[in-house]
Amino acid sequence: MLPLTKPGLVALAPVLLAAALFHAALADAQNPPCKSRGELDARYCDANGDLLADTPADKSRLKDPDTLVFSYTPVEDPAVYENVFVGFMAHLSKVTGKKVRWYAAESYAAQVEALRSGRLHIAGVSSGATPYAVNLGGFIPMVAMEKEDGTIGYTLQLITHKDSSIRSVADLKGKRVAHVSPASNSGDTAPRVLFSAMGVKPGVDYEVLYSGKHDNSIMGVVNKDYDAAPVANNVVDRMRERGMFKKDDIRVVYESRPFPRTAFGVAYDLTPELQAKIKLAFTGFDFKGSALGKEFKDSKAFIGINYAEDWKTIRDIQKATGASYTAEDLSKLKRE
Image (cartoon, rainbow, N blue to C red; front, side, top):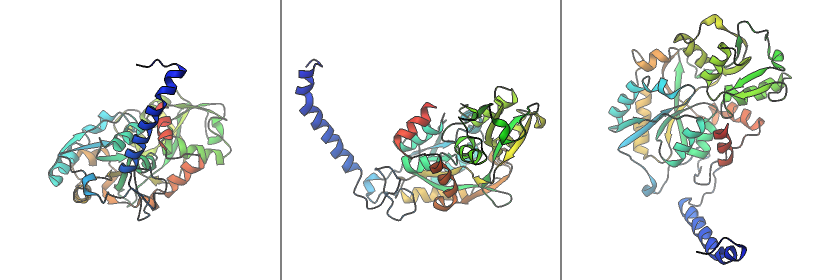
């Protein structure tokens, strides 16, 4: 074996170049020519302009696994939701004729990477992470939970402890504020845009401390580990209903207009027939009396969504913060 001295590296150069060319050729073969892909990763194509990865025309690239892997966004401890989705997964298994297995994603980045690697087939992805999952993981959003009022929205709430002197966004200056993670809409990107427009710039006017999950931010405020936190109102409501804190433990000092909720969908390369069965499983699921209905009390059904239209506000907010849907940005999310 040649030593890694300068002469050795020179001698290895042709070998390394050949290897690089081989892997480049392999990548080209795996990523067929594409006239349009927008912001999608090079492995995907968007011929119809819907901003989503096209299902491969080459049937050899389609997947029809015996076991489907399902995951829900890690807004809290993933173990909390495994039991909540047991009934739905049984329904999903019955409709598709497949076994269904739970995947406990520990972060937004881990969920996107699982989609990208082909280890995850069906997922509920948080609103802020959805554009990353779409562009980097080939995620196809299909449905969202429809609320009793017919909407699919949630809001950003800025919460603080009941004893806090914080009464408005302006009072955040000089404070220690928990943000969730860089991929979180209500927990990071939205407050960076909305609060800055109010004259308070996160990371400049106050210290940003990433908690990792909405429940960490909320309980951190309850326990006075943080002065305040921007979080999703639906997570606040569910945690309070489970008795994790009392209603008067916290105060809401600001609330945004609604954003779209968690998107449920599939990997782009599942067979069209399987994709259709999975969507049917979602839209045909009865929330009444189910663990899902008990956990998401404000929801009555899964309803179809349009990513290009419904997620425009989310994408605009992310662009305003300088976000780009690249593997490099995904690795940054993982490090936070």
